[in-house]
Image (tube, rainbow, N blue to C red; front, side, top):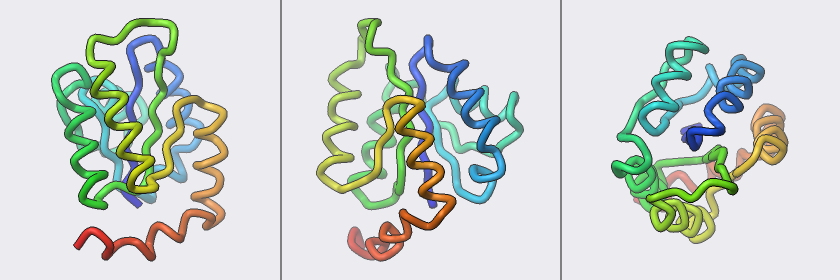
Length: 135
């Protein structure tokens, strides 16, 4: 599966802890991330990650483009709801695209854990049936 990992600045440590805890699952999939988040996962967790621009520089939009082409299977986005983000319209657009294209999206660690455990147990295999939908 193709998994995007995104974390606002105040949530990057949480993302590092999460990807470390579930490293054995993540290493079986293709990982994508916005700039700093991806670089940190690569360096600190030793997982290969395709990095896009940082979120405020268009990274969220780059991931959204993959969602719209059915080229992304899951997004884990640790958002900081207590801090105003300069690229909030991009964040909202990404969330909307996940709803439109039925891409599983976790915006906090609790939901991310449920989704990642579901991935491990095969509960997201329905995404494989949709692989040709965007073609």
